[in-house]
Figure 1 (spheres, rainbow, N blue to C red):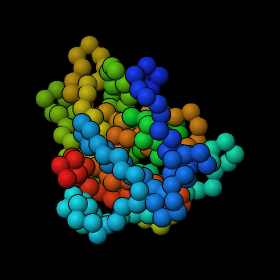
Figure 2: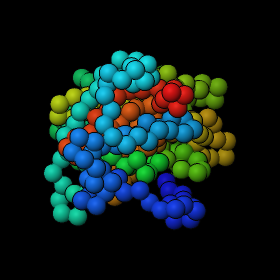
Figure 3: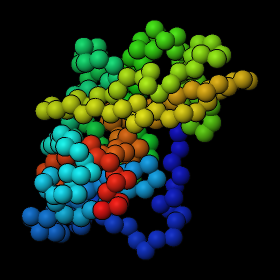
Figure 4: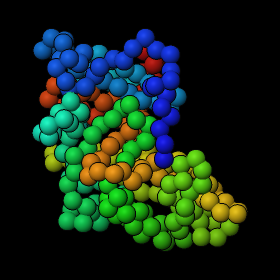
Length: 247
């Protein structure tokens, strides 16, 4: 998995600081307006500065009464305090009854809107892959090595002509200490092809193995969520982000 490096090569006027550091834009705004929100859509997205009220008409019409989840920031070690990190008790696919906290462990999840892809610790990546294999076993789904460009873990039918569809995959759940956030299969999968001499259509993970013990949530997995960052917490609300652009 690779990032494009566009931030270094693009022609831009500068970088807008939206971290939690004292010099960021958010901490230079007034106490009542120190927040910003992003709402990524398939081809574009929305960036809003200031707090968002759930009762605003454009929020009601675009978010269709979706439940808003608030998660307080976690205390980060020195050198990481500027990041938007929240506590994560579990990340899993399939039914809640299959969740094993001891096997997965707890993590700090960094919400990284500047990254396209998401990264998880190697052990957690293995657990998620096992859960998907178990969920797809009744449908004769098998794990294969993905082809270029990402070469990540993919899943396809066990025989030619027996292809899986996106609806065959279970939702993914992010378990926070105070709430659970559910993502559809389109948030963690993309349609690609397996590797080999006769690669077939496959659905491949948008989650790659990271090097540390943190979960990094990239922008693709936040698609169609209105995500508000303030000085104390992060708020998630399912929303039609493409509809927001027409407001």
